[in-house]
Image (tube, helix red, strand yellow):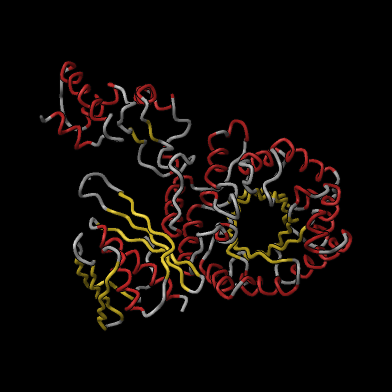
Length: 499
């Protein structure tokens, strides 16, 4: 049985632009538990008051998964970690120290024997609080494997239940990592007394490959994040690891406790919270992961899905695959779409309409159902709302200055302000800024259509900066200005939680 250790709330949140507030972390933790992860690393308790509080609240909320807090191999860190996770049904302290020559020399300024003594002392110290202790050797893959064998052997003797072999900087390769782990195990007398874990980063694009190679070498705990978020290039992506084990069970012969049908939902929740979308061609959870446009592919999938799909969309929580009709599509897929829309056309009529469709497809990226019907005939995370939108009035044009009047409700009081700006959205944002009486900076603004047609809903995601902190807001409306106003208010409300 493989255990899945999710560090989205700790390592994942350290990814630039992916910070979460307390309410969002609790929501994410609940979804991770629903997903079935075995261990949730809730944060680095000593990092800040906010981190401590979030670890503590996640520990109180989660009932089934183990909850872990990271701690350096120092007493104060371990004290903080325990104070935060002690409320969990199944608490874990995860302590670490660097073991590579470069880290010991330049960062720790310690001799190898001193590093071993410190690691042993701190695992023993943590053990007085908690039975479940994980020990990580930071930058393990650039460390001497014989030295690692020694330090792991010693920490197991004093109570470490999990030994983690991290590829902290994403340096190793799959075959190399397999041999590396086996060398460590071979030179330990007690490798069977603790679970072996790996934690791989994606700096060279091999985090998932390295993690799966470690499975073949005997690793039974895999550390990863949703959507692969994390420091620098990110971590091994949970969804890719899990679906590799699931799809290639014939090769790995391993299983885990993940409810794969919750994967897409979990991915989308994280994207909604952070405002960071996955690329369309991202494996498993990308928009195009189960989409087909090529005529050859569409024909094959319509006849037998396994021709081009090695796993079903339903297995990861989608209702069905997606046939995208565009210039690469074939007549077979077009005919199936026409039939699904309720039309019964002769082969001659299909051929004639298909030629018109191809002409239209050359002009449009995607052709929607309404377009086809026209050819034949000749459609998140709730947080406490300090401010709520009451009304807004916008005046704008190419011969007048844009003016916005915004009325927000705070408690039972309506506060109204007006402002001018470089366009209606800028004016609206400045009016809101007047209401909250804070100097805010807009870091980014994005607008996307999430449905088709002129009545498509617009999704706006904004990021604002206040006192060096970044807050993400999301707004949804068929009116893009209203969506923008809602997004800005959403970001402001998140900011108010920290004040």
